[in-house]
Length: 563
Image (cartoon, rainbow, N blue to C red; front, side, top):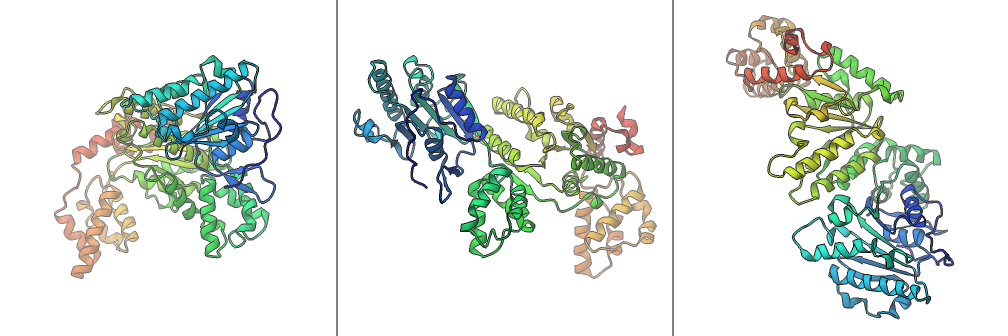
């Protein structure tokens, strides 16, 4: 942490400082100086490090430090409150002490602390109204979700939120030189009195983009000579590949590489970035770097041709010509997740898998989605994958044991999927064996522009090809002439998942009994039982056909189902 810079001379108009600022900070300055807002709710990347205005050496501090030194450097009194440290006088303790020398009388409890702040604000405003000293006061409430949460069970919480809201409504305070900041990682976790206050401005603090990361890397070079050796041009590539990571995450990465005296090379960034991104969204997402490509996908020639065209258009930045999202449907085991991995590898972008973002605590599910969306916006180009979409996405009108939460989750995801600012950066992929259960509004153009069906094998020849292709991946060789000899016994409607499980059993028999792969296959085919009933497979095939966007994706055997 750096020490505070000297305060500039007071501005007689009581305006906030306006140096070169990031967009969100400039919005604060413009909102206050225009007298539109005196309270600002800052959500998002609020726990990161921020550059502070020191000449040498370059310093980083917390968001609270940044607000104090960059946004409100002219304010004589700055008070902060958090539920751990209680009320603190960060600046102007001598001025505050003339009114009350002991801030500890409020203790650490939220309500008495907020009441004490409110009394002091009224005191300063009354002094100014009487023509005495005009004291400019800034208040920063850190991690406000912990003491003014979206929780209806505690009357004190309502009273505390009410007082904070009154800071924006009480005429005496609004007309005074007073500004307040509520810092919270997730906006949706705040009390509704604060979230729904039209007089407070809500601004999102984003993760650092490529220019900010480049500047951070450049300033960090003297302290990390091993990790950041090389020329400045190398930092351009590093900053581009590291988008999606916070400054704190970047510094942890640099410390790790510096300790090992290893350079931070572009070639090893994918797994390192994946690890840090997952740590910053623990349990919420899985980050899958691209490894396969569409060559690894068996069959589906028309589909692969179309997907490759989309990838080519994406690389040419013809983003208006590629889908905002895909819906992949088909029976269980047809390789929906595998297709996503192959598509990502073909495009050379990662897959971000949405995992367990639902939470039992009120407001936490929406907060988790905020964190996920914030990370996605900073990552750059990627596929966002939602498996079992019929269960994960919720319903427009709610449903189940938490109808209100389900409806809000649905609304948040639907809004993000149709956000045109994401076009060319995020491509959504929904996968399900029951596309009929996914809300129609989510499947409309502008959210899902291409619906892809995947099918089991439709002929014995396709079944033989699938056995041979997947057998090679497990070092099990099935000669073509041998497979032809059992053509009539190859099961109908084979799926890649079904064949993969079968091959696992065959390999076990080969190793234990010392027989050939084909002998093991022949024996299994004599008494083969399908793992999924044929009726279920055919029903799921029909669902996939009815959702399909393009007729050429449908095998001839199933085209009658499209009517």
